[in-house]
Amino acid sequence: MDYEGQICRAPMERASFMLPVAVGCSYNRCRFCMLFKHLKYRELPVEQVEEELKRVKGVGGSPKKIFLGDGNAFGLKTERLLEILGLVRRYFPDFQEANMDATVTNIRMKSDEELLRLSEAGVRHLYLGIECGLDDVLLAMDKDHSLQEVYEAIERIQAAGMIYDAHMMTGIAGKGRGMENAERMAEFYNRTRPGRIINFSLFIHRESPLYEDIAAGKFVPANELENLEEERRLLSILKGWDLEYDGFHDFIAYRVRGKLPKDRQKMLASLDGCIREYGRQEEIVAYVQDIKGSPAWIPPIGEIVGEVLDKRRRYWYD
Image (cartoon, rainbow, N blue to C red):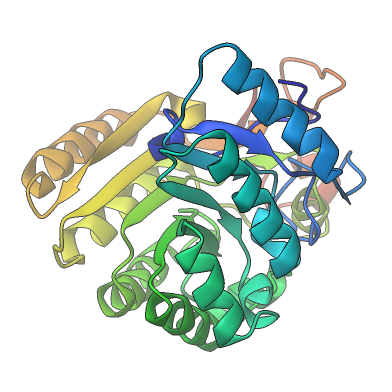
């Protein structure tokens, strides 16, 4: 497969055949995200998509689940998506479902009739970047939606027969607001009942707009201990409906996953152990190494923003 950019998809899609239909993200404005900033968004020609289907079929592939890439494939026009799904079914008659990332705007731009047609063509799981349960934070992060708009979008895709899954980020609300966000997120999830929640705990890229906000004193990041405590609070008050949860903390190499309510106590016990461990350590904030390569240590941010962050320990994560 010829793939341009960085592959990023939910771990639940690891067994799905990944079929690129676009390069980059058509929105690409979220202040924390650097996955697609170096790419110019474009849709791939249908002929190129078909060549990939031919290649996979030619080596004996017969996938039942397809993940359409890249950043928000659901943003393609409905007719283009239906054409691609028609090709998928032609080459793989046993195909069962197509899943992909989506934004609230993608959904808002499609009529109820279009959503139903896509559902009938095999679209099942849409992964929405909810990220946070606080409207002021969504606005500050330049997300494309308010929380109310997410409720409305989810109601529409569920009515069409699709399943919504949620991306979120502990730490996105900043220092001191983790518990507030956990409670708002739990309220949101308990009402909307996603099939899956994937938590990519916030890490901050040196070249991201969010880093500029930190340097300007507009955003103070939570440390990793706060992020773990936020995650624990969320999992303790989520209601159970056979919900799949996968939480990543790449910077501290910690991950907690399972199904709720079945695995709740095991997951909470794991988090308790990790919280105890990092509660004994010096404060850590997750910064990620830039793509050009950076020194092993970030220069003290205190030199940039005075007293805002001068007492924090900072690493680059490679």
